[in-house]
Length: 364
Ligand code: NAD
Ligand code: IPM
Ligand code: MN
Image (cartoon, rainbow, N blue to C red):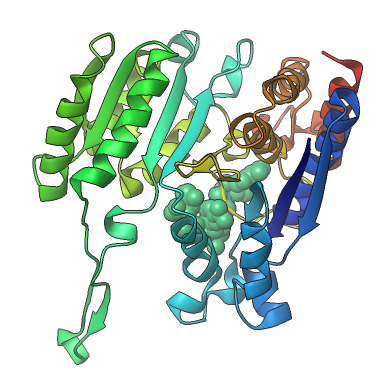
């Protein structure tokens, strides 16, 4: 069986961490005798520079012809002066999610045993560990609702976004959250703002309905403001967090940092036919780009999710995850995970990639 993967490294640290994911994939292919073909395409700022638009036709066609997309990150100060729809995020990333109907975004955050000290949580809280899966709706809500725009002028000029959810959109993501919970700790926490937003009232109603089909899964509802706070107080009591698009965006950065770094959180964005785009939850990190210090783990773990969800290669996926665990528990860490007095031990982006690729090769 041969597979086709489109590689869209993008901007900032994207190409740096993508190089490490490719290194690791190469070892996985050798060990599991896989035949994966890669085709690289420009996306985001680099595509604006090279082709005059953030999502060239050739890139979209390349993704359409593939089994899955491995995505880096897009955006940065260089393109922020452009009109919003011409910028990398609104002109490439969101259209890709919409075009392929990637409504289901999975972002798994687990505090590594033995690495509790990397978390900014108080030690009595981090010592209990946590394992949270953020299930984020990705193609609806306030990100995509119409109308969206600006009108008027002077002091009366206004801007508007529309938050909109249909029963169908809520139901399909809720079902995924409950199914995921069945394979985990059997608890779904649905995050909303039902004390204010009409969308959240419908969200709760639909989620309650879906819950009837999953009597073995406990359901609780929580307001987004309280959720961000409770995650800091008792993260170990959460299992699956079911979120709308905007709330999931917020929750995912928080759970990433609770594990120690934005550079650890991978993600899978899936449609209903198994096609997916896989990318770190964090961005192009312009503040550290070009220095060879970015953490490649989120990109490497995103490659593992690609193998699992789109190519159905579970053994290869878990081999990568074990290799990452080996690196982290051996204290093999990039600088952002270390305190300032430990930072002299920091590994570079490529040292991390080498270690993990080698661990895959040795068959941990
Ligand atoms: P960011 O996630 O890029 O960075 C936030 C902080 O986390 C920074 O201090 C950064 O150095 C750190 N960080 C992120 N990834 C890291 C890694 N792998 N290793 C070490 N540290 C890491 O968020 P931002 O600064 O708000 O956004 C920067 C740009 O990225 C913006 O243009 C934004 O729109 C874009 N962005 C793109 C994506 C994507 O393409 N999927 C996601 C988020 C943000
Ligand atoms: C993410 C990012 C994107 C989002 C941006 C870059 C559009 O923050 O994937 O979390 O908000 O979804
Ligand atoms: Mn985000």
